[in-house]
Length: 317
Ligand code: MLT
Image (cartoon, rainbow, N blue to C red; front, top):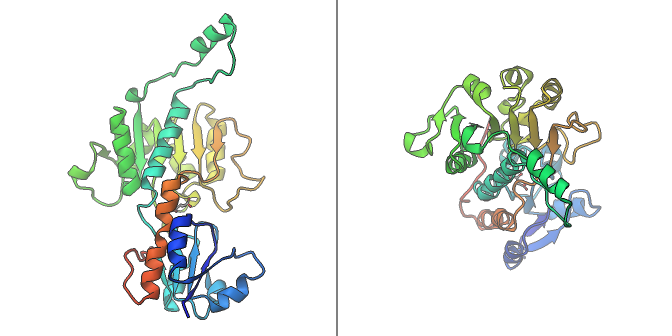
């Protein structure tokens, strides 16, 4: 009998079909009534961002051998609890790097180049008013791009900044060899915060990064900084960011990832602020990235076949 694998969140059809040729695949969200019965039999479980895999779920999954995370971040999966029960966890680092970098490019263009799209012929006066008012105060080649976290995505964002002739600096705990810096300058956190015109965050989801962009860190940022967060919601203290944006009306933030809740609730501290823009965790949303992430099924199958997976989850503190 082929092993039962639950797809708890939507995958791209191609990898999903590939898995169905090898396993019994059931598509069933954790909130559905039949999930418990399936979980009792399942040997594999595939999730994306919104299924919590914790001790409680594991205790209902006595036959589980592998959890596949279609994506990078693992904060919704208790990896040590899985491993303690002999359940391997696999994920897809790198699958959405290009998509996230493109999204950062889109946010930069939106924030730094004001524009209007015409859907009709406009009177002369309106035309010329747009040309008077929609003027970027600075070109990108006059701005400093600060990158907090210089892993796969951070370093690719540095190449983007370099291509736009921005002055690029980064802060990273690991030593990056000069050949991999893409021309960016390593700096301490103080310099990063105080000199960045655009501060973009690309650290990972580990708990020790919680609240990294704190009230204290924000106090060191310039009053016109543009803050982008496409990494993880837990990295930003959203209440502190709201206070900073109120006190500095020319500062702006575009926040794609949220904590503690996605979807966000009505009491999100940044809602209603004119200089905060919230997006619904879209950075990895390209068809290509979705397909790349969904190929986690290969590692799921490797584990179920008794082979070593290519991308086991790291043990992050
Ligand atoms: C990730 O951690 O890779 C992203 O959250 C994936 C996603 O957006 O689904």
